[in-house]
Length: 97
Image (cartoon, rainbow, N blue to C red; front, side):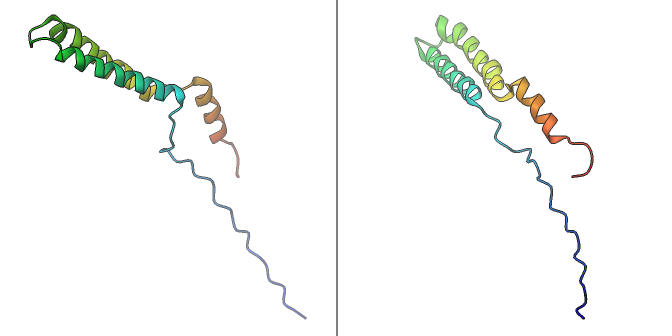
């Protein structure tokens, strides 16, 4: 008679979710391009006239601060709340898989 061989149960590896996925959507790219346009406008305003003109001393720094400190970080940090809630519910599953 042939000897019966017991097969080991080999677990399938879990799907590992990478924290380095690309989370950029169309809205993020839109914010990014708007920020870049605002920054370019700020530098153009800075180059107008002489070094002590009104646009280069007062308007361009405000425009550049808005571009660098508000719009660009908004493009990086903006996420859809519904998407984040759904993703969190899918990743955490109770029990053994």
